[in-house]
Image (tube, rainbow, N blue to C red):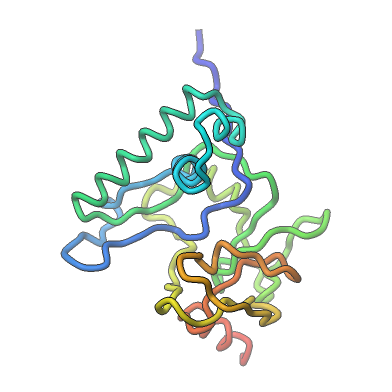
Length: 211
């Protein structure tokens, strides 16, 4: 008898960052030394520890059973603890998830955006490049790509606690709130994730505009 197929865990949106590195001290930058935190494990921590939902409430949000949520949550906390104690990088990718909306990442400028119409996105709304990847596909392809695959987190964002979060397309901006990643905010006009105004990512996009 073949095992019952896994039910996909439902996520409202992808994580706003691709991972974390220790602020100081010695750690290996090699991908094989990273702790891989799956998307559903990140979501379990977000719902339980950040939104303060009960495990039953969180399991309903992810469309899974409470025992399944408990296993995912315990695995996630063990991985985070390992990264903290052993001074390892955390990479957030892969897993068995499905997003409630269609999200895309531009392989050229690194922008992340949500589809706003009924048609499939064909180009990046920020830089116009056609090298866009559906995040659902990127998650599904993770086992085949392995740990050496290309990730969207090649730009570093915040510069301290002050400054502004800005839309990389229309330049709409709001004052940055300490503790709230700019990448967790969507531009109300463009449905594109905000970035820090003084970040390497935004400077890269400004340079692409000049070309």
